[in-house]
Image (cartoon, rainbow, N blue to C red; front, side, top):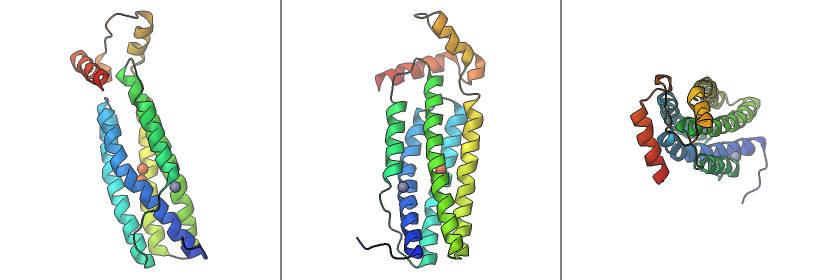
Length: 198
Ligand code: FE
Ligand code: ZN
Ligand code: FE
């Protein structure tokens, strides 16, 4: 592997890392969305998938500005975050709400990692006065921050505490969900059955 001999080469290397992370996410986000029960959460993830696909294109534009080929360099950090997320989400949950809460936690870890990576790359691009690249990366950073904020909002409403507490009090009895959880009892029971088959 060629050595990184300049600030410019370092920036290209950082972008290749982020490029790999974003491409992985275009495959990981749909999996998370599929496991989400809450409508608001699912649509937030689906919206962010669209944004992620645009972020991949923005990185390709950034490589073009820099006169470099769009090559991905494996991002071990994002690979690990995705792997851990899949592990946590795949555990057994008594309530779909609880799985949704875990999905949010996994997605927010992703967003924070991206926010860090874009923040550094923007600072380096600015130092090198690559204004177009700064602009492209800032657009994506804004989307990551908004996605994170949205997830925080959903986190505060996704768990139906009444239903979750009911479970503790009447263990063994059929759980009921109030209308506030955004789905009917029949739907949530159907989903629970389909989840238990996985
Ligand atoms: Fe992203
Ligand atoms: Zn990385
Ligand atoms: Fe993101």
